[in-house]
Image (tube, rainbow, N blue to C red):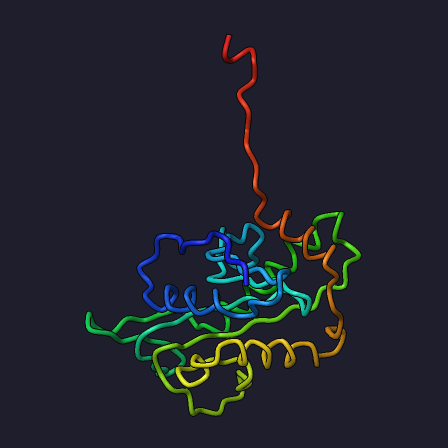
Amino acid sequence: MKLIPDRPFDTNSHAEKKVFDVIRDCFSLENTFVAFHSFNLTKHDKKRVGEADFLIICKYGAFVLEIKGGRISHEDGRWFTSNSKGKFQISDPFKQANGAMFAVEKIIKNNPDFSSLKLPIGYGVVFPDCTWNLQGAEWDRQMICDSKNFRDFEGWLKRLFKYWNSKPNNNFTLSSRDLKSLKVFLRPDFELVEVLYDKI
């Protein structure tokens, strides 16, 4: 899978770096799969500016990944991560991923070039450092990648795509042309040239 950028952005998250390294080796024979690291969300409904840790676009659709490292705990509706530096409260990773998913959809659909595009979309939450053996009403197990799933990350991604593609009105595929256009729109390469009168 192609990663943009090809090196991770500066981040204090060791877990994000682990995911970055493992994503690189996924779908090596698929030249249309692209993952964007630290994707800015300018159309987030609940934040002035949001961010998706990773955004993957492929023939199965667009998928947001939220990454949470360390030891994870949930107490009275609050989420925490623990590591050698202590215990810290964090945002609900499922709500973060869900909000980022809808923000990505809005960003794409607000562009006239994609207003009629049938875009399968979904999200997943990755806990690379711990094992997840819990059942709950607010998540499905297919959405979650724990330390065991992390050993076969490509296999987990395939199951994630299948899970979301089985949802109503989400069972479409994107063409190579769609994916090329989305890649250019979401994170374009460009060069701005100095205007002549400023040089003069």
